[in-house]
Image 1: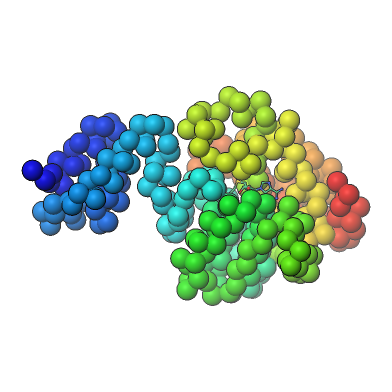
Image 2: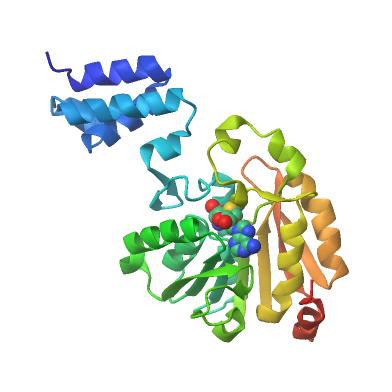
Length: 301
Ligand SMILES: C[S@@+](CC[C@H](N)C(=O)[O-])C[C@H]1O[C@@H](n2cnc3c(N)ncnc32)[C@H](O)[C@@H]1O
């Protein structure tokens, strides 16, 4: 006897303990919103039922709901998400908002933006679709993440009024021999990054939902956790346009030391908060006009 859509919903709710999750899973399995399927009196076919049960089993095994569903929203985008890259977080949506506001305040037309460590492509695609005529260059060291970012970019090319490119790079150093060096892409009004910022010790204590499923290379920075943030701040000046700025996401506990570091190499910093009112990142602008020289002297770092 085939299950009705309501019976399937109830079975998944029982297995997962959540009506919201059952709604998402059933919607995904029947390829339409659950309430629409319910009002149409749809009877899910065998494939849909086994897809829903398989999703519930994966959740029971501890996999994050985002990977189980295979897509997740970020600002007004719906992106493919899978273990090739970090799951985009709501905190990062706020960081994108901060970057957008700073660009608007500065009145930059057709801004040139560099995102370092794009993962699924979420921040870069959001910036490219939300800013008229922007040029966005997004990089990542991980070949897997870049392939996911490319797939996501493919979903939104028609909403990009400017241009977006993806290249493989170790922060500012392009890796593939046929890629242009980053410096040849010109200067940037905004350098945006949500780099790995978890220390090795904190990684060992992370909840399994994150540690066992998301790529380690997207999470761990080094012994202290702030190493990659410092590298980006040190190298950014060579790539910043006059009046350009850096927007970085980090752990609230790192703000003090990263602000001290940034000020020590000539940045003026403003700290911003996330939706939970925690200090979540900083906007760093160079005080001096000779900013490219600061970068030159630090490129050996
Ligand atoms: C915390 S994730 C952020 C992903 C995405 N930007 C987001 O906010 O959802 C950090 C990203 O930085 C990348 N990454 C790590 N080390 C890197 C490096 N040396 N150069 C470029 N990207 C790097 C990782 O592969 C990962 O995709």
